[in-house]
Length: 274
Image (cartoon, rainbow, N blue to C red; front, side, top):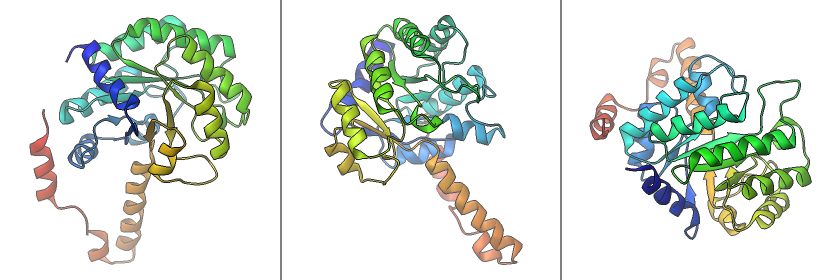
């Protein structure tokens, strides 16, 4: 599907009534499970991907090429629009960010998220002007071929400044970002303030505000247009693995080995578009 057509299809999911729930896969089988469940689009999770590789998230330890290959796999298997959670755009300069967006378009991604993070734990959020310039570069490279999500990580990097968060998101929208995203605002009032301030640009949310997990319908009522879960499905699966390993240590083979059958796995793999 040509980039502009894929862009229109993916964007339409954000602008329709109710928007979309877009879960994050971490490997081929999880992507196929999500597709089989009926989700219309899926996303990568930089945190889940990094963890599967045994590396920390957000420290530039996963390469652009590795993430692109991962995203291509998810799209190839499912045939669904894939949104890439591409951290800060994999590069120090606006030109690097543009190159990442171009590579994502060439790889057939439907969307790409660009954060204002730096990968530097001592100064995790980039200065305002730098962040906006990088977003402008991403949008110019996209040219209506891939949905660009402008994201600020103020809240999850210990900067609980709602005014600065809204300022950043508004600036991202002004330079052309298609969707806006500030994971874990402190509460529903803050989320509504963000949605109101940047309207009509669609707003994405990671699960819920920080203080309370809401339902999909409650988030839709607040005006949210996209709901993702980041690495939460992956950590849910790892919690089940941890319980199984504890059962195995205790000698309980039944509890340790109860899970999805290989017949079901084979069925899902057979449905893949690979």
